[in-house]
Image (cartoon, rainbow, N blue to C red):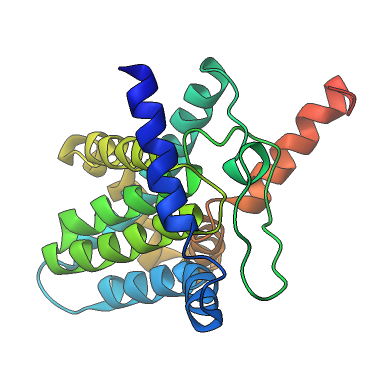
Length: 233
């Protein structure tokens, strides 16, 4: 059964990655659409944050809780990644087609399984779903495209993004409970009318980090770890 699933995983990977390099236009659409996730996320958050209606307070609380949900989901992702056997990315283990133009993936030396990219994108989509079914479906469709783009480019196996997506969805739904939202997000939101300059300065800084899956935060964390254990491991 395990061999069957592994074979299916590779077969689906080959089918998607087999399209890479076939069309220069398709390659550029996949690469450039995938990097739009930050801008799309910021645009939706801005729209939902400032939309004037009676649900504004609850909606803002949910957006603040999404930040926590994404952070927790990535921590869960990394814990699972360290507990299961290391998985080499398919582009290095079994080979992968490359796009028709020069392109280099910005990758960290972490296990391919599970996909942290899929984890945080689907954690966001689940949070948006709790605010608006339409926006949740819209961002979920984009998250699906972005996750499959990682398979298309040879960065992940399909099972990497599937498990990553499930981690993101499950974590987001657990963290975004009303009790958590009211205890954590409501007190933070109370600072907005009292100290708007400080609140929005920090808020947009955190959103910028979240939109990319906390890349700078992770690099700082890795640097701190290597400060103690060195770079030979």
